[in-house]
Image (cartoon, helix red, strand yellow):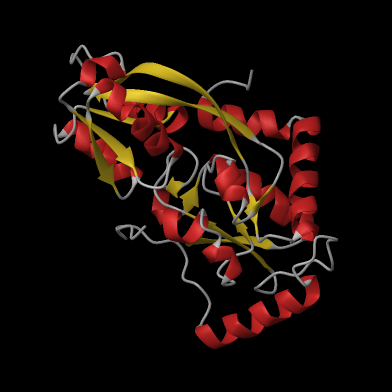
Length: 270
C-alpha cells in the first residue's frame, strides 16, 4: 500500500553499499531452509522494518527517537547478536507483509505488531508468537455505538493491509456499513475524532492506548479473533529466525519480557 510519510525513522543505507550487503547476505544464508550462516545486511546493525506510528508498539518518542514494545523486544535480539538495532519506516502492505522489504535487503527483520496469518506466511517466515491481540471497535465518546450491528448505513474506518480490515470486509454485507480505508493508524484514529467515520476497527492494544490519551473517544467492543503477533524474517532465513526465537524465549524465562510488557501496557501479561 502506498502509505503517507508524515514520520520517518533512520535513513536506509546508500544504494551501492546496500546492494553489496544484500549480496553478502544472500550468499551466506543461501535462502536455505536448513539455516546457513547468520549474516546481517549492515555490519554492526540489526536493521528492523516497521511502520509508524503504531503506539505503543512503535512510535516516535521524545526527541523523535523510535520507541515502543516491539522496539524493546528487538533490542533484546540485537543485544544477543552483539549489535545495535537500526529502524527503517517502511510501507506495511506493499513492503512489510508482502515480504518485499526483507527480500530486497531493506531490513533483516520486520517488527510491526504483525499478526501471523497463513497468507503472510507465504511471503515471509515468522518467529514464535510474542503477543496476543484481538480486534476492537473505537468510537466517538457518547455515540452509543457498541457493536458492528449498529453501523448499518454508517462508515467504518480501517487501516489498509491489516487483519482489522479483513474482519471489517468479512462482515460488511451482514451489517451494511461502508468501509473507509486509511493509510495508517494515526489517520484512522483522527478519522473518528473529526467524524469522517462513525467507528474504527483495529488491534485492541493500539486503540486502548489512544483512547487512554484522548478523552473524546472510547473503545466499546472487542472481537475475539485469536490474533498473535510474530517477528518476520526473509523466507528460508532460519538462522536469524532461530536467534529471534532464542531471544524471546530467554526474555520470557528471565522475566524481562514481563517487565517490558508492564512498561508499555501498565500490567503484566495474563
